[in-house]
Length: 489
Image 1 (cartoon, rainbow, N blue to C red):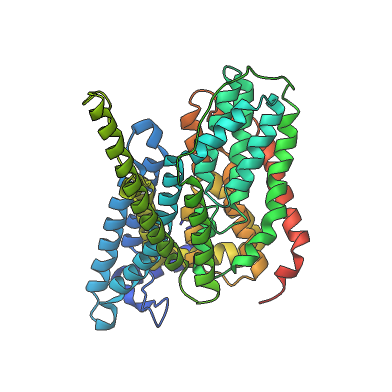
Image 2: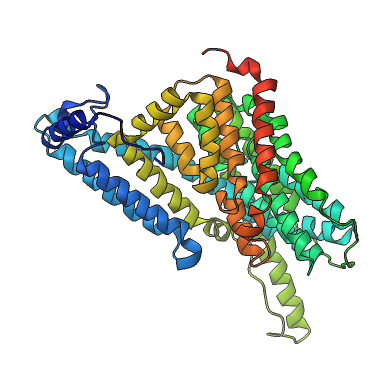
């Protein structure tokens, strides 16, 4: 959708073709099965592009205008599909009348699977946070008395290995909180540590189906098997290690002031972690062995978490009842403020609903542009004219400017004819390309908000050259190490 450049016809041919489409758009079928009309040079197509780009400008300006990113794309999606439906409803041939409905239902199904999968994962992450898992990890790191350079490497290493299981956004926020707690007023260290964490979290998320939304989308689409993602481990590691090694040389090997912070995990924390790992296993098994969508395993796991949440709630209620009874016997009624029992639905409510609604808007907007015909046009330009390797490298660069989610969804909607090696390449580049700029990934944007005024777009840009070296090195390592994956389909 960001590559939708108009075809290069001669002036006369373009004029005649455009006039024909304005008058009789039904003359060009994109697919016999879907009965699609090519609207790329129709006013509906131009209007839809303008609406989408206007909506996305508002998304990019979210920090400036303080309007949640989901609002503009949700409205844009509704308008685009209304325009598409209007054209199909006007066709005299009844075979076209159901096309808009069929296509939008197809996009809604894709979104529903993504929504439920992410909702389950987010609820687990929120529950682990409520049980104090992440606070305990942060407290342990802060209290160890490591040097700044050691903390730089440890936070990067943990970001790289935690993000494949959790997600790169949560991991980046957790590790950057550690860097800020240790670094204090040492802005140079905090800046370099935050850049390192963002790069590591994005790189770690690229070799796991659970590490990033883009890898999840690729896995759910079925173009790459679960086990094949892990061949990206070494290229992803190289992507992080190259800039990390360069940036670490700019750090003094000094020790920060000692901290005495203690955090204890609540009862049931390890059970929740175990249930999360079981849930991931069920999602993989559902997909690989039962040939069911992975979301079935995730939602079943969410059901297990809700059952365990009930046990925690009952235990809390008994504890509060005993506490109140003991207070009453001492004549202290009303002096102790009773806490609230655990409620799994509160963790469900704390899911990133703005992000989930943003995905709805993006998927339907891109799906609408695909129905119009722009994705076919983009696929021809990129994957035929430029070639898959160049196109897939370019996808990563584009992901640094525009969020990698719409970029990857556009590629998956195009479904270019590529071998496994090329699908792995675009998964890698879309996952790590966002590290080139601070605004290129959700992790980068979130950490900028957390370390406001210290880790900024400009401070990240100073080290883009080092990150670009890692980006290039990871691609070369993948092309060399996984050459067997590039065999013809």
